[in-house]
Length: 576
Image 1 (spheres, rainbow, N blue to C red):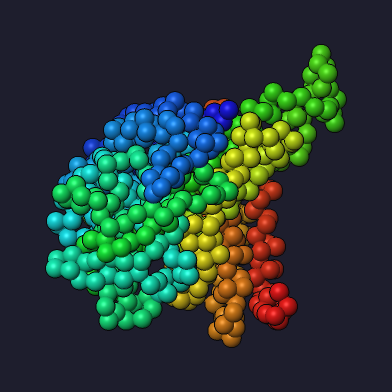
Image 2: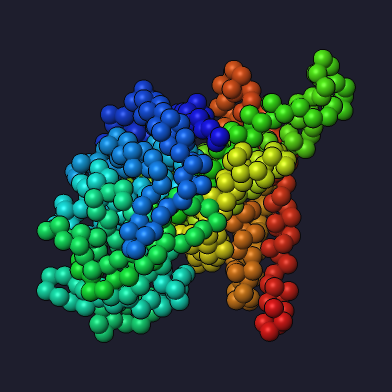
């Protein structure tokens, strides 16, 4: 069975020892009444929900899957009661607008809650996270009437949300969409077909609210002619709207989550934001989902590590190279083998580094919205813009890597369904694909976040890292890593002016390089503030493992980037 225990102690360490959350919250009126004690209660309660309600359904729901029958969609056995506990506890409204009934908690705290929910049961939480994203988009862009109608219901989970972007011919290039919106009084009639709609239809809520991208008559072509609409399953009078579930997908993983094909046939919708500006509005939701999906990779990596850790302590196989450590038994624990330790420490270093980064970005989001001075808000927003594609791509790539390593630790038992390791590998794989593939995230990082402004935003982040180097014992290696990042970025900015393909060819390597350096910075800071106890001693040891065994990857990435695009693009297209 895939057991899960929320890593509350480490979450508290990141919040209060590394990032000094209480000082952050005192500076923002919206959070001034929140302190460590309140946060601990919230973390503990979310941890209980995750471990006792969500996690026990993880494997059984995967085996059963979601059901589609003649247009009706049903979630797996047990999901109705578990989702009721998730929603009635107010967990979908923890970070929403308090004016509409939500709790308005800081993102740097709720990032930890998301990690718990993703780690304990990703498929179940997929029915909730799209609701949170839809509420964020509506709160930011919709009219007061739409807000008052939809937000309270979304925050309580009585209604859930979904985003309907993708069409069979239009994935990343949303400018190609064909779904239409025809004016009809104060509303619009939406017609078209959308695919890959996560939580697009199900039986866990009274109503399901779609945010749909569509084209108005005479709209400009391409992405500049897309508008956004709220399209509920049921209208205010309780009548069924004009959309239906054509099917659900049969997927590699997260099988308990219903991924729908939705057919809109003159479905009534209501405009969100300005006409032809829908993509800008939708990016508010998409950027939240990208951060959340990054945390999904983190949560599943934590689940994989926990189960592999239990296995390593129980499994005996072979003997230590230095002599038997379990002389009274037939063999030693597999933890006597350096390669098993390498796999386990790699997981731990990436997971704890990812937890630090996701919480750090959550804090930047809080400051960008709630800081009292404009300069702090602007600087924080630049951090969010720079790091959002990194959180999404780097954390999900590492989540998949860690999950595969955990499976490898199990050996042949990791390939057996009952042990659960293979399910985690299947479930985490989607996180590298949806909400913008990781290749698209890397291109966004390299081309838009680094090259577009000539590396200024990246330079600001480099200066931020240099302003607090953390543990003096790690400062030489950290300085060298930061210098290498700065050098590579400068080379990329200059070389890209003569090579239009360079950004695309170097983007994945560039994002990986930045991710490893950012993790090194956070690990050095964690090592510096680690308490003088067993927890702190272990934290310092993992920091040194990261610097010795994982950070050196940046030097290979540097060499790959500087090789340019020639041998990527020279191969003839018709030879593939």
